[in-house]
Length: 287
Image (cartoon, rainbow, N blue to C red; front, side):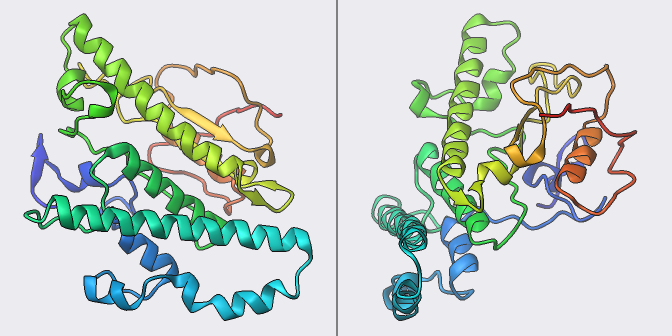
């Protein structure tokens, strides 16, 4: 998070997209086990010794769950069972990732419990985001899929070129095709997350019905580092009252802050006059 990464910009700008104010980045967490412990366990229980003692948060509340189920109607018992199974599934996958990390990469001092395959890692983190919303531990989640100038490659798409290197394609059709493959791959990962939200009951609908999700990147053209005309996807549940299924092009120079300001209104956040370089609010249309 320290030092200068490019053009004298601090590395904090590369490693987080959530900020408390103009100068203070919010700390981010990329270790699934640490996130899980923050949601359901005590801080500092990520070590191997602690894991042997504290195998499952569900074991710790089993008696309370049995008492609660006895007081609920059949439909509510089904919701409890679905939620508990989701928690158990995340636990199993974290434990599997930890075992794989200890066995396959003992020479690395990296975080324990991070799956080596990006798609597995993404899905595990997405499931944790769903659980955080489902339990109402938070109302806001930010997931940075990759930081700027990332050297990450995605063997799942069939080649080992780093993402950043192929974005500087200089018109090479082969590199452009690879960039498109990576973008499609990322979008499929997003679809997994949205499907999990859609299949999770929440009140009179699903978690997706009660969510606003903004997906996109900081550049419209990585080859030229253009940060204008950003291609952004806004997924809005039925509760937001926004007309969907549209591609909207706003006037050139419209700040992205206008969209964020409008999203705050839709989320019923107390009125905010300005956010960043915003100049007003957007007309999103009514459903």
